[in-house]
Length: 215
Ligand SMILES: *Cc1c(COP(=O)(O)O)cnc(C)c1O
Image (tube, rainbow, N blue to C red; front, side):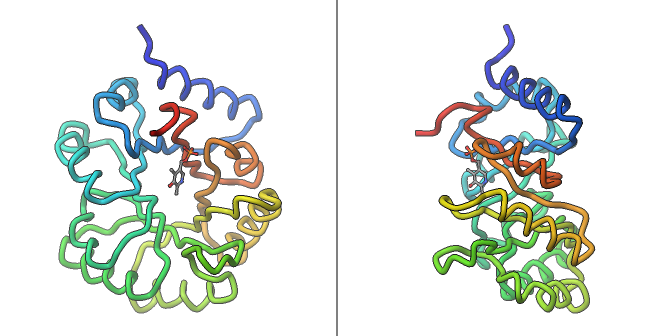
C-alpha cells in the first residue's frame, strides 16, 4: 500500500510539472517521528527539513549514515551555541540571519572540514519581530560572508508576513536574488508554494501538505 505522504508528495510534484516548472521539494518533517518519514525515504525522496537542532540529531543522525544521499535542511532559527552540533549533520542552513552566527559557522566549517550550503534569511516584510537581514543591508552582509568568512552562500530565504500580498514579497525576493547574482530562492510553504514557484523559487519547504496537520 502506498503511504499517504508519498501520494501527497507525488501529487505536488505533478502539479509543478504541469505548470512546466521545476523546484526541489524539501519535505518538512518537524514534529513527525521517523517511522512516519520512512515511507518517503523508501520512496527515494532526498530533501528533508527540520527546525529544531535537538530533535534533528535524535531523528536523523543514524538514518543519514544508512542513507548517505539524504540532504538535511535546517529551516529554523539557529542559536550560535548550537552550531557545533549541526555540522556535518545538516547539508543546508536556511536561516543565516546575523553576523555573529556567520562568524561561528565559518569557524566550525573550518574545524569540521565541511562546508554547508547556506541561505541568507531576508526579513522581506521588514517586520520588527521577525529574524532576517534587512534588504537594505544585504549587499554588505553578503560581502562579509563571502570575502571574510568564506561561506558558501547559495541563495536567499524568506518567510513572508502572514497577512499582506505574498506575491509582492516573492517578487521582491526574486529581484534581490538577481541583483546579488545568487542562484537559489528558498520560499513557499504548504499554502503558497505555487506562487513562490511562479516567482522562481528553487526550494520550497512543504510540511503539512505532505505529512498532514501537526499537533
Ligand atoms: C514549518 C515550516 C515550514 C512548513 O510549513 P507548512 O505550512 O507545514 O508547509 C516551512 N518553513 C519553515 C521555516 C517552517 O518552520
